[in-house]
Image (cartoon, rainbow, N blue to C red; front, side, top):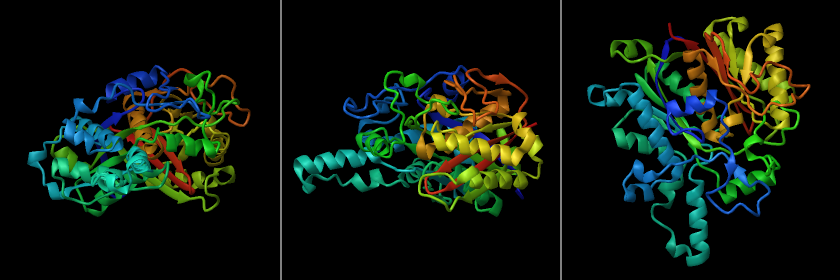
Length: 412
């Protein structure tokens, strides 16, 4: 990367915490966010549990009219962005708002708005469709609403690449700063798809765990007895800045984004390429972009979905790229606690990676009780690991064969 990119703010809304401090505490303590679904009656579904955001009351953040006109994924996005902006000590009135951009994605967008309108049509006909339906449902509306709230007038759009969505958002946000398009770019993703269509759709694909007797143990990446991922929801926001601009304004620098790798499998709609070939290339590219050696990487926050194919292929990809060093670095999957936030996963796991680099504590992979023989790396099983972490990779891979690897460096 030609310009140094500073991360100056982070904010989250997650199944294990409504803010950074709560999220990090529960992450390193190995707390599962999985429980029986409360958003709708899931008793007739193959999967009856998910990682829902808990204790989120929109009226704690919005007036009633505003809340009614924002899909829950946009509510999550606005709340995580507010925390990130406060975290970055950004004085909005003192900056050029034309030089603040937003790249904020969602894999699906307003799925609950879709659900509600579908029910409305069935009971009351097309005449009952709300005029707010389209602007509540479209996946770019979170980016638009963030801009409207703060008056940021720079580049503004959404990324959509399934589970790689918000990792792509972070990558292209950094590229815009490198180009000089903006001094600051707000990047991240939000998702709220724990709904009948969402759960039913992934059940139809046989992608979700059906461990209904033990929801808290259902997300078990790299474990021999894993049987699918657990749906999550929430939002994560990063404030990225031109390093010199950040230093000049006295911003807190949490970490640096030093490498980006983006590839395509060009192989299958849902299955990863054999051997994680696309993942090998995305990780290699981000390491080359950072101009470091593979042996300098201390930690990988794996995509680690708890699905049979992903975990095996990602493990093989890491061993292919890193060789013997694969057994010296630590890999973990925070999805074991948060579930899979789909389009928001990349940003949330980037935040977890940044916190790891800042604190030199590696979150565990919980529920790893009987390792899959084909998954034979150090996954920090069930307990956080204290270790110096100077460089860490966050992986995100999406349906359609989208691969993104982000490399973060400790700021010293």
